Picture 1 (cartoon, rainbow, N blue to C red):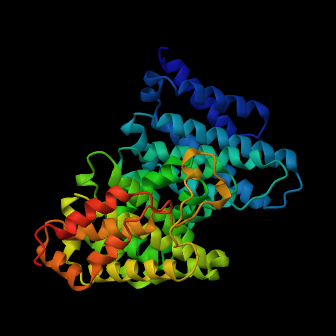
Picture 2 (cartoon, helix red, strand yellow):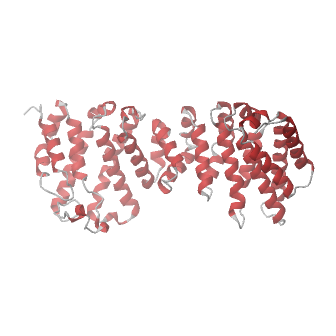
Picture 3 (cartoon, rainbow, N blue to C red):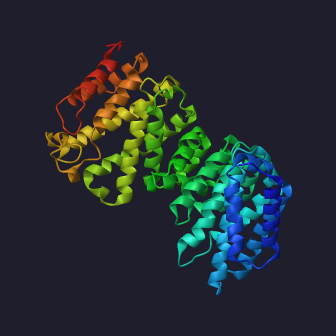
Length: 443
């Protein structure tokens, strides 16, 4: 399509009419025509500043009218039309920014960010009988912010400055999956190292916690997972501050994302800082005793169970970190980590032998054939095997740790766990780790 001067001037005049006349359906059609025209690159690049200047005035008028009508507007028809006009303004703004740094900068200079965010703040508080009436402009407005921010640092910074943290948190708490997903996209686009550090501050941590909660409750939302893996896990201060404020449910989610990041191909440069590894090792040492509650039946409450599952997840992460990830092998020298692991294995093994409980050896292999009852699945499957795996990793090519295990009488303890056990179906792994403990050990 050729972007003729007559078409552009005609569009500008039509938009000006919206500004000066009482709103009607014909104005909605005018905006739809403008939105469609902006899909064309040539037209998009030819739109004059005056047209955008008129459009921001239309958007400002709509913002003022919606706020004046309030949350309990009796004229539903007029209110609905205003919302439709707002959504179409946002669509036009969204389309105008596609692969156009010129239009991104122009819209920023004309004040579109301020008025758009003011509208989004208002819309996120409105309840209507037909939710899509509100969700449509919300979604379009957030998409506009996403397109405005792509590749434009000034726009990213302005959006962040006005929206962080309250508006972002408000939008992430909206009862609309698309609104939440688009908001996550905008946050991901705006984030950088400095902004992640802002998130780690106590007054802002609630936003980070909401993102992690969404990773657990709505794992199909890709953007929240990308925020966590590409940004959150790279900041030790944020990981530590989130972890201390999180529920055990969300701690497990965080640890699962960490584990997935470590297992990715080429994860030698996974971006997880050494200080995060140290923090997790210390957390395991402090809380590992919680897993013993699984044997006593005191784990009947969900909170106690989740605390034990957090310990199991911490162990999984530590096993992976010390499995030939050179950047984390300093954990071999982490104070008392080896001692804690050997002592926990001893406690778990003794508990399992003292009476029949979740840590006792079993001979039930039906679950591995798919014939077993899934409801009888044990959360501690392979737990003892993983403890031995961690001991072996910490002893690998480390004579001091090998000798320490011998001094702690860990060798007979490991050998005593070499019996066939369906709760720890990793007998070959146990033997391998026994070898890691023994090689080069001074007898």
